Figure 1 (tube, protein in one colour):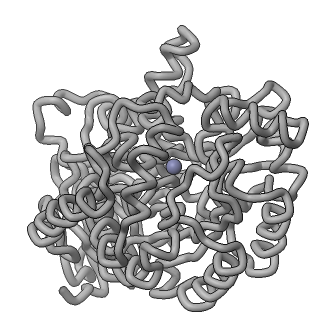
Figure 2: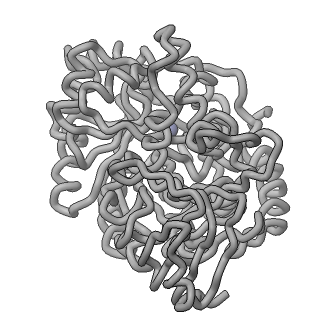
Length: 459
Ligand SMILES: [Zn+2]
């Protein structure tokens, strides 16, 4: 569908998540050439005349596109195949053997399925972590440009097939040589970084502790600086990580990561469940970013990270859905609610993690974690038009008094009606426009059946 040069989204409840956190009842947003050109109150209709296309949004909330900062594209084909196991067994018995049997076609199908689900539930940007060579980086990057999402794709870097102190547990199909990882990371950065008007970015993803040597982490730090690439990795997810760092380096996982030069505002660490008090302070001091994945932490029984404490320390905390076998969905709307309620329960304090804070984590803080805060994350004039309409005409969203409360505590991803990225519609009235929904779902079922028989996993 050709992209109209100007679109007016009329008569919505506009939840801006701007600096003053304005909510405009009966507001309209004019989009021109992919950016937000004007935000209008109910009284001003002057700009309506110049819009090529008008979209009535009465009875809907217009929110910034949601940002998922930690997602495994390749795991969507594994949905339902790895439940009720602890992290290391989950990886060793199910996830890795299946991922180690992927073809490049599986990599593409899994990425398309992930993006279809994200688009249908209001996610516009994401960080796709752990892209290994056998999933086919090129095919995945092409799928992102076809879907029209904004994505950071992070190439896996490794030189050991272990996890923590459990050495050599990775199947041969997933093991890569260090030199190949570095070479591919460089070539993918050169080929894809900034492609499609900046929609695709290329990052590097060193494996979690036990998957890289100290020298390799140091090399990744230098590589990221030299290539101007951002870094993401799993850190301090389970107690095993703390044990491994203490035994091998005599320090905590975060202290080690700081020592090898990887802490800082250009790094995004997933989970961060097992941090010492001093780690929490250091994460804030170094302005490191955290991808908090509450569903995954609970389902894999990893623990509950100290998110309010990290925010107090000055860390930038965003949200992530992680993978289909540990969540098991990519619905950020559900993740927002969980992020709020688990901390209230942990601290026995209903005032902690208010609705506004968790909505910020899914929008502006996500944008900062991706290094895109000047372009996306809020509805402000000049920013890119990454916008989502939530249909409020539902029993579970009625009545409303505080729209942010209804979105955080009552909404579901399936309430999303329309999604736009860069001023281009990816979803209208719940229907995907850039991806073939029926074809992707049919292919995904077939691919999973084949993957199970090829990998020999008893799922
Ligand atoms: Zn993960």
